Image 1 (spheres, rainbow, N blue to C red):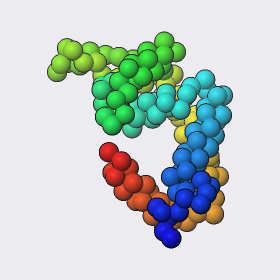
Image 2 (image 1 turned 90 degrees about the vertical axis):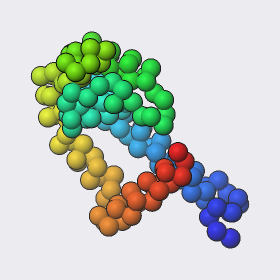
Image 3 (image 1 turned 180 degrees about the horizontal axis):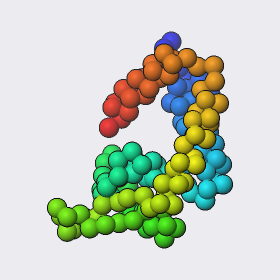
Image 4 (image 1 turned 60 degrees about the vertical axis):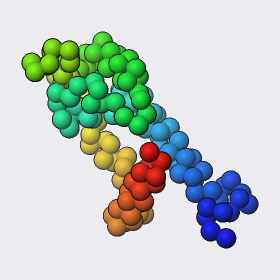
Length: 146
């Protein structure tokens, strides 16, 4: 019997294992970020703006999850906390570009080395080749879901 047909135990179900692992990763990230008073979702926004400053809110939203209202709330909170700024987009007055503030950049500078340490702990004993395979497989599964 193959993995898609085996219904003998939820513990053996591949989707369950992926979901459980994702929950554990989220829990660990939440605990890690508590010290910085930001949520995992806020971390993703800050990281995306660190990667590419000047993105709009709509560029931060996941088109498959329709999370525009959540992005707005998180951006509002990050702005209130002094971690990012909205500036009018010179090419489109209806849009705003988002940038990390000095405090946001300092936070990223402080957190990024610690993120690398956390990743090293999480992937301990897993080779780069195995991680590459895992990413490839997860991307294919994601494409099957959208």
